[in-house]
Image 1 (tube, rainbow, N blue to C red):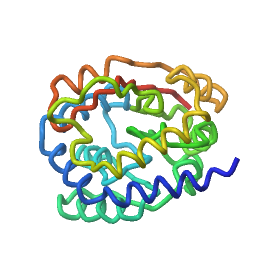
Image 2: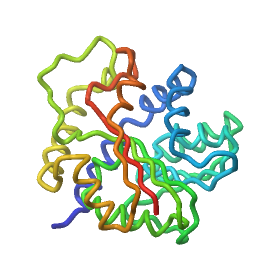
Image 3: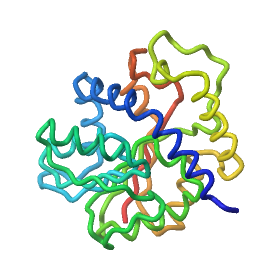
Length: 240
């Protein structure tokens, strides 16, 4: 099956969301979520030293800039050029150095064994070839390097429950929401229930010490504010 049309859809969708998405992430960076997400990352990253970290699906650089603030050497990649331009602008504006590149998350053209950690947030549900992505990410990690993936089974999320007054999709118009639902519909047949499927794919890719944490969403989304995500998520970690 040709996966490229789905990727083109994704790039078009996120290109139309750059401005408002960036504004939301800037507010998130300045909010208590800054501390909460950094605490979640530090649960899994090696402590006591500066790390080489790859942020896959960086968007406008939220995770990359959090980690750069802690002194890590961070590279952020994203398929959408507009997101990468905005990440670079924010990096310069905040004085937090990070490298940002337009790149396919499934086929990152980066040197093997060059990262101590790979982090990603709400990306892997969008990938039509998730197994290939995990295999390529394993190649990029140094021996003993860690993958930290925050995601949810968005292709199977329920729509019945009404959203609160403030939520992550509050500024998305009807047309964009229709595109979002179409993408989920296209991806759903390619995926199995998550995160169980991720565990299987990670093992096949060569990872070990795989762990799933389903409590992360309750810790980060304790209240229904403008950053709220109603879909229960997970953190999955694995060692190369």
